[in-house]
Every structure is written in C-alpha cells, then in structure tokens.
Image (cartoon, rainbow, N blue to C red):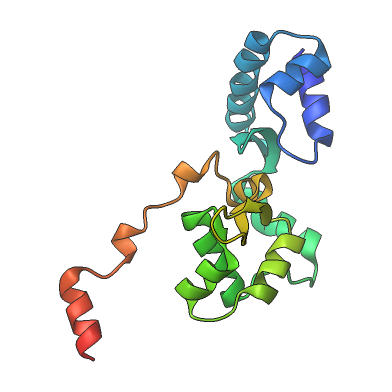
Length: 177
C-alpha cells in the first residue's frame, strides 16, 4: 500500500485528501492515515531530496528545503514568477480579511485592486466565492493552491498581524508626523 500511495502522490497536481486516496486505492481511511505520516518521517530520516507534507486539504510531495535553491534554479532558469508589491499587499488583505470585496481591498490599500485581483485570480491564488448579500459585490478568498504555495495546512497557520502593527504609543507618533 505504501508503494501505491507513493505512485499516486507522485503524479498528483494538487494535495490529495485521505478519503480520496482511500477510495482510489481501495484501502481504509485509517490505513492511509497511518501510512502517510510514516512515509513522511521515513523520507526525512533517509535524507531524501523531497518531503511528503500535509497542506491545505491533503498530502503532496514537495522539494526538501535544503534542495530548493538548486531545484528552483533548474526549473525557473531565467524565468521570473515573483509577485509585485501591489499583488503581495492585495494577497495579504484577502488572506487576512476573507471573504472580502474589491471595494474593501481598495479601502485598505488606498488604491484600486482591479488589475491585481485579475492577476491573483489568473495565478489561482484567489478566487470568487460569492456575492455580498448587502451590496452584491463579488467576494474573494484565497484558494487551496495559495495554502499549498505558502506551505500552510489552513488559514489559522497565518502569522498573527498584531505584532506587526504599531502600538498605541507608536500610532500617536505616526499621526503627529
């Protein structure tokens, strides 16, 4: 069963959940839940160049952190897939305030977010999840792909914002400037 798990996860384009793995492999969810952490620990113990991680809604193979610079250089070879400062700011607003409308994002950032939202949607980092019942505005949230790219299991693993915000004493200094 371990070999079957490895084979399926090797070709998975997204994290795969325990239930989906169990159904697809004809195994019990309990057996899959037992094997996945064992496999993950074994790869670390053996010093493999990849890791099996639980992120978002499932499990997937990733490059080991110590190998990432070489893999990145090999795969990207001159390509630039970085997000702009505006995209990063917008993504942070969506991540911490979701579900959120473009209007709310613009209010937080102080500039229109239309183009940036299109970019983040095209890169599958955010998605439309419905409409605000009061205004009818489209609401956006982060995707499972966002969690995967950030290496998070869920939004509860985002770092707290409070330590990054100015304190009341600092706020008085900022307003006085």
